[in-house]
Image (cartoon, rainbow, N blue to C red; front, side, top):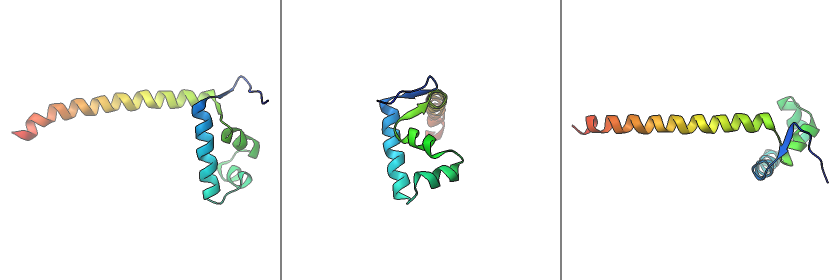
Length: 89
């Protein structure tokens, strides 16, 4: 059984992300070592990511991005509602 440090968190979302990242890495024909070298990390760090260990900071950034995306989407919807009557004149 693997243990996680306080700085890492495994979620279902993290596991799914890892599966997709591993598949894309393999599709690109890259080893973990080569990809780690390209992105500037270690092979063990990349391996942890592919197993679903996602740093809490990453989860925080993703959460913030989701909230901002929803807020911007609402602004777009409001602008569209305000512009539609003008466009239909």
